[in-house]
Length: 208
Image 1 (cartoon, rainbow, N blue to C red):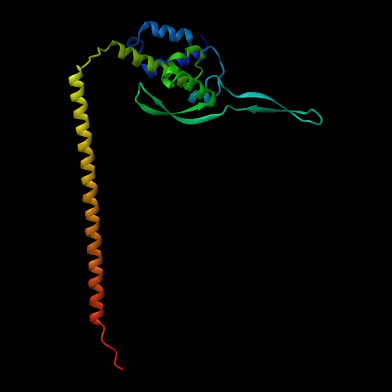
Image 2: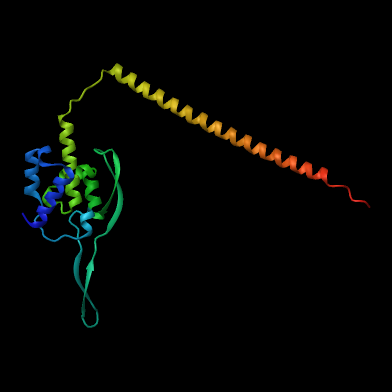
């Protein structure tokens, strides 16, 4: 295991949990499948690049064939990807190639589960993958209970009633706020009319 792989393994253990909290087979698979590449792009550590890194080459002039060094950077976008296991959107930097891979896999969770650790070059992807596997293993240990159809219908009806009551409360609050604004506007207009009448009474007629 290279030095970079050792550092990534320590970071995975620190972010996900100690080795005693995770299955031994899972941690052994993580240790054996960490990438052995020693060099990785700095930006790739903070996103999901799916193997896309900076490339180097030459610019060749048309006249004399002069070569000048240049580089090609991957097309990186900042996206909000929905994770079903976390039940929320997660903002992450991904390449366009990674977005196509995620769409093909069926979501960010499926992409991370299907991608092996040795092809996950970024530390963020490895930590995220380990967290998802840990959550799936915890969900597998839980017992699943099913309700009879009558109770399911009753629960759904209760949810509908609660949503309807919430809508009614919001409607009443909007009406009360609109009525308050109308009263304030009416009081303001009445005060202005009263001030105008007082000024008219205070002005004396001009003698011709």
